[in-house]
Length: 330
Ligand code: ATP
Ligand code: MG
Image (cartoon, rainbow, N blue to C red; front, top):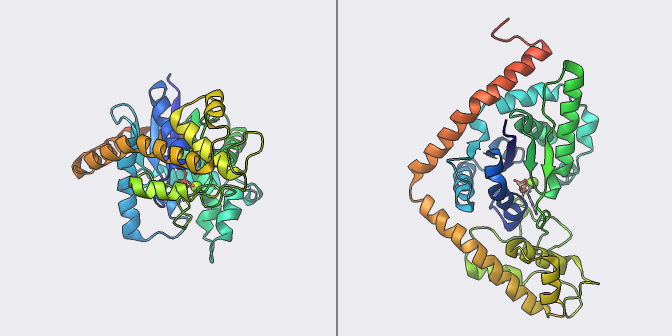
């Protein structure tokens, strides 16, 4: 059997180069080695308030961006999470085997809750829904950015607990990080992860930003008080710019050192901006092409849901039987 890959992105804002380098680009690289399922996780997005019309638009935009980035719908499944009800159903079943103490330790919950006036219970339960997304398909590999490592560990803990309570049921999923770009930092504040939900004009480069805007954002990126690149003593802002360049270019660390040592920050930024623009241009072109035909996108999403629903339903049925919940055979 070919191992299964599962990953997802929330339609919670404009996709940025962190999402691309940390997740999407890696998906594209490995998709043919596995049976691949990539989700637009709209049930995760609503753990913080989303304007309904904007959310509807973002779901389609995200699906088109998956395709534009190079996900091949003839091979890989692109699925909107809410179109497969088994995600929410398994999440409840797993909620019942997850100790609250495990969820209280999640750093993403702490960070996101601190930014909210009123914290919905969904934000607290978020990692259980994520565990359900993965375990539902018995995924072996989960390609994500570094910020999701803690949630993946929790997913394995939940799977292990379920297996020991009810008998071997779930495959243990392994985390797969990209070699470079696993944690892209905010350009305005290199101590904070670049995030879709963060506001502020200088924070992120979005995948659909025009070249002028990309140049402006990168040229204004926070660096440090040194005059030029020094690999022995660099601040997080410079390290972040170099990481972005390396992830886009695929250069080795030796090449990076030889090329950038001693370069003034203005020139470093120019080169990072031009590399970013060059790598995003073909994606943007394909995006424009794909969005001229909304019917095509509908078809991809319909096919995706139809292909994965039987796998998902079979897992929920098995889990219910293991737990003693009423199933069709009882
Ligand atoms: P939000 O602020 O709404 O949580 P996000 O930018 O964190 O948005 P997610 O949809 O939560 O994006 O995550 C989608 C994928 O992108 C995950 O695999 C995550 O690990 C990865 N990712 C998110 N931010 C970064 C980043 N700054 N660098 C590398 N990978 C990232
Ligand atoms: Mg996130």
